[in-house]
Length: 358
Image (cartoon, rainbow, N blue to C red):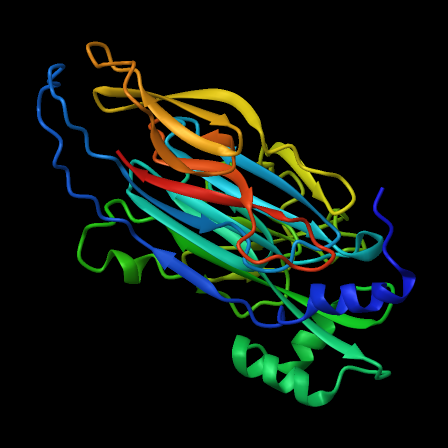
């Protein structure tokens, strides 16, 4: 096990929390031009390699350790991926997520969230934005920090202070959860689709955990954590109408909640080497074509397996890393890949999503 000098823990923690007060959001609606022929020509001698882009799931810190996890929609055409880091002594650290849908030709990602959950019909994402204020050597959080956060969130300082919770057991840090939603457009090519899918934040200081009711009409906002632990559950729930923004301080006692069924992937820990050499083959079908996605010697490739095609032809290169999961058509491939920029006392690999235009 790799030993980290005790004198470096304060530096590590400062790096973990630096820059997470205000998060960045990136949005992309991918438009693809279909230039594939109507029929498969098995005698063709030339092939066009697919266009591949890569998105880092979490552009923030990976902390002392990070769990990579994902949920795949019932039709296997959409995927939600999260990187959930923890700090020293399992302190809560904001997460990052990526969402991609083959059917809607839509993708989005966001940093600095406490939680995220898809609605039962996968048409809306509920999330809780993470705001963290660091007192560092002070005894209290300076009033100016609360005022700055009030301006950015539209929530008054009294509500922010009363709704905040401790996010560190080692130094002064207060955190706030602010709920939000993202509407997945039915057609990302439609006029105004980007505007309609812009994240909507609500002027509420609650939502350490987020859930949906089975009918998708209500977002349940979890109470603040009782302990300074990243995996601490919420003990009670409030109700938010995502359409009107109406907030109710409590949820009906008989209300049922949909719990996201995360598939737990690898835990990236700075003290444990990551095997990047190989992974099980993933078979995907994109329209009339089928592919086998392989990970060998740190490289992800795709070989066409469509009937009538030359299966001895050289495979397409997708990118470095090893595959963790993929949507049914292979448009979104979740993988571990080497980090472009090494960060001291953090793992040298990260979670990425390759978007492939077959």
